[in-house]
Length: 520
Image (cartoon, rainbow, N blue to C red; front, top):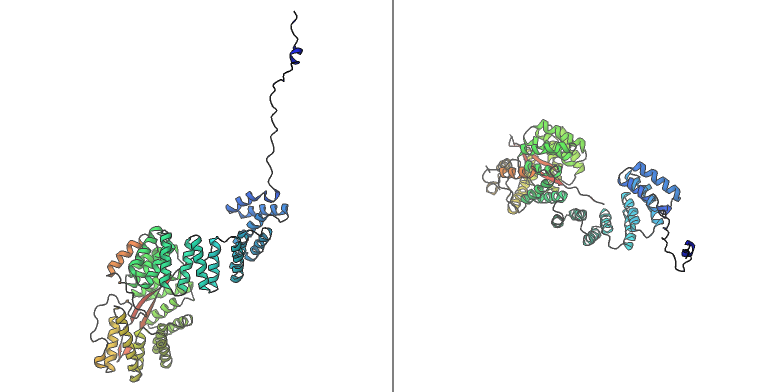
């Protein structure tokens, strides 16, 4: 029997199993042409390779005929970084036309308007952006900043509080505190900064600002605490170191203060408050030539700072260089015309220059402006007595007594013994008798640089018990390294009573300055 052929097997009625054909691999889909180089533009931008980024942007805009939103957006950002605000504004407006539903584009338009100083226009654009995104804290924050510059403080506070409700940020707290300070609401500003420190306990700027506010109020213990914490987190913070040195300087620890200032000089050698404070340290050490050198450097760095001019006038008065003192004090009066002590020092210089009539006018202006400082009336009384006007001198002496009694009632202020001695001599010369404010000379004074002539009473908080304790507290705080921008000013009285030359009565007080960021 013959075997079946192979062809018969192939003719089987059942289908033959075969392997399925593999599909051809597809090409990677190409991105739309408008967005093809966005990744490259972004990469160059975040690497700050702006030249390569500009080349990629130029190629992308050429291919898309200027219709690529992201390329235009990044180009506007680069122009803003280069300081070309107007050109960046025009490009951001182009982005808003390409994508009118983008709140980010409108925010950037408003930001450019803000940088150009067009705050009202910026507010209008921010309001349009808020309609597209009602829960954006940044819009509320920036609206608050714009209202602040327009001096609409209530609206600014409302917007900043809304921003804090949406999302808490250090910057918003700082701006809200700044507005309270601009309105003179120091207590509310402290409460805001307290909340900010609770939210962000390691923010050195918040800690330093809060410490300075406590320092301004005379609450030294809390000021030390917050400045010390700031130095703990940032040992190189020159603002905190400067504040700590200023407190030591105020209490007469000039050598320790100079040690701290030496640290600041390495990081901020061009700081006017630093050289101002160094100069006043040398003044406290009676190194007047060094004091003038440092103060003139500070004046070169900040020629319009009235505190530096004030101190220069003071040092020149001490060195009996009355013409130079008149020059600097006149300049200080032009920048700070509402400060009575400046007119008092100017009157002292004029008296020594034998210009009695102008000295009287200056004293009258000082008396009209200063309602707290008894030195103004005491110096005026001395001048009037020396000119033979005993009636006018007696009137000024009684005004001085009223101010002294008010200071005694409101604070435990220690008066400088030299001031007490002068007052007693004037009282005896005027035959005031038993109505003298001081019947005995005061022998004890913690420092001749204490605030005997302070125009404000001390805070209800008691200062640290001794200069030694204060120095120890500050050495522990400043050892970590932080400080705020402070500058010192001093008041001087130098006249002759009954033919006797009266030594200078000096008071050193601090003027705080705080810096904070204003805009994102």
